[in-house]
Image: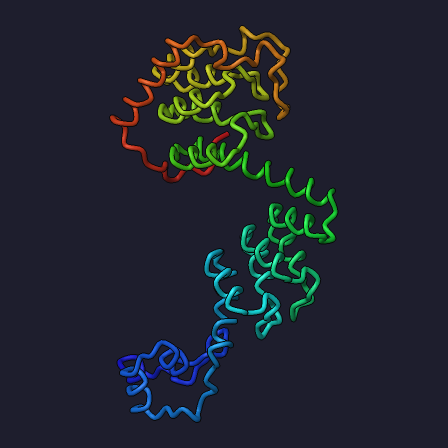
Length: 314
């Protein structure tokens, strides 16, 4: 009632063509219906959606939000997977746009078309491509969609680069939780940027002990050199991060000068066949246990917070 008194339009429709009165009737809000009628809204003023139309609109909403179980409920109840909204967008359009792989597959199993075009001439495949949702594209290809393999490969390569740079940025800015989430999601811990610098290089440069410990525990390569021949060990020395230097040294890290000239700074291919690139595999179990203990202590004693105002890290 306060909103109505403040000038709210009671006949305004949402994206599904539903008015406040539609919603009140649908959800059996009798008191709200009375308030709307008190302010002059009559049922003849609106086209009340049928229960079937509401269910179809809900299917679109659930698909857009990735709510797999609710999408399945609507499909089991008989709602068509081909239902389209006012922009001719189907549930598959929305799931493909948002990258909801399991929902997309559920819709495909239930007869959703990958070729139907919306008002803007785009198919669900187009939406998946536009938003870089390679997992959805793979599912579509499995179900007969016209998705070129080269496109999938190119998308994957681009996405891996983006995720690798994201990891490096988080490491540089001391974002422990973000680094952990990136690693948990499968990002290459040894990814190196255009200057050959890894997440360990950047965390060492800034002296972020908790991130250094995490990267070492997760198997980061200790002795990779960047464009200027520096290893993570060298970075701690440049920044006078004595404790960080000690931890990297304990794990087997050395300076670039000790490695010679055989380490390429630009390869993101696993350098496991290079002695200079050896990582924690050279560390015995007692050292790893010690590093793990240091890691736990640093998390307890150091308040982990995102570093503010750091725009550049090279």
